[in-house]
Length: 454
Ligand SMILES: *Cc1c(COP(=O)(O)O)cnc(C)c1O
Image (cartoon, protein in one colour):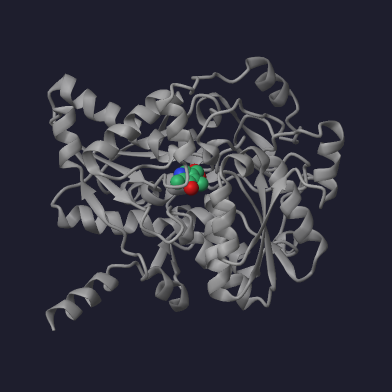
């Protein structure tokens, strides 16, 4: 029964614990502050929104956090996810680089997001919660939590950014197929939503607004918690299954990455692949160059300020120190809905501040060209967000060609684009524009940053 034995070995390669980079950081994260008192918050301040197990994961400095067996059982449905050597892409680029990608599009929702959705649903169910409210941009997170909610018998309520809601009706249908409800944000269902609609009835929405709506619903209902698909420490922690698996797979390929590339919206898929390798480096192991790729139109890492800010527009969340464009910043329209957040994960911001990673902002047309190039060479059509990582990796491979050196480049292929075909149709019809953010809008949003005593 060699097939069965092989199958069991595959399952054995799913990590037994998540990796917590907080254990290896040379300097700890800045504390999270209460929005009113501006003093560090304690676990009880977050209790109305999150189960205690997740609050503890937010602050723990233990290196390994055990993955509960029921979560690992569900991971087995699609994990370990495949790692590919992109030989056909290498050939098309005529590069001496060795390009590898970890493909997270094999999950039921089509991206890396179920890695944390399943864990969050598990801990909420354990804590006796009946319902979870959340926001979604392009719909990837909403469908992932809807999928996880179905497995654990939780009601899921999703506030979806209105532009995406209109652009991507199939994502809503997927959430409903999993049993969730999905409304366009800003909505009439919350105070924060109504306040925005009063000012501007046709408001296109933003992640910051959708977060305010979801947090409001959770704060007002005892049986309802809130869940976030990125940014927070526990979300990044859950995503480290990606990098840990990639480490083993690179070892099987007899190679080690010289460069790792990931796209950054809130920072979770990037941290997921990068942090296990950075941890190795921080503990005295091999050094690796790391590049975060973000949209030039929403450039929190490359143009944002490293400062305390709110996570949402209505200022209901605590203050976290992160690279931010200001919580009122609304980026111009572009197609990677998952990369439109005003802030960046505190952990990703912190490692950039420590000089451990680099970042670059790219325009969307070049990213779509890279996505089409990889579809034609490797056969997988990427999510518009993933196109940023692909373009970043291709640029690195072309640098290898110029310099005549062979480097191993690893990137996170964080999701497929099967629900994003309108974006590709617009690209092929030459309707996409490379827009820059409005510098005045950014200056105004940054001027509104909360002041915090030193
Ligand atoms: C949500 C999403 C992103 C952006 O979120 P991160 O937390 O930065 O990973 C990127 N790619 C895909 C496919 C997504 O669904």
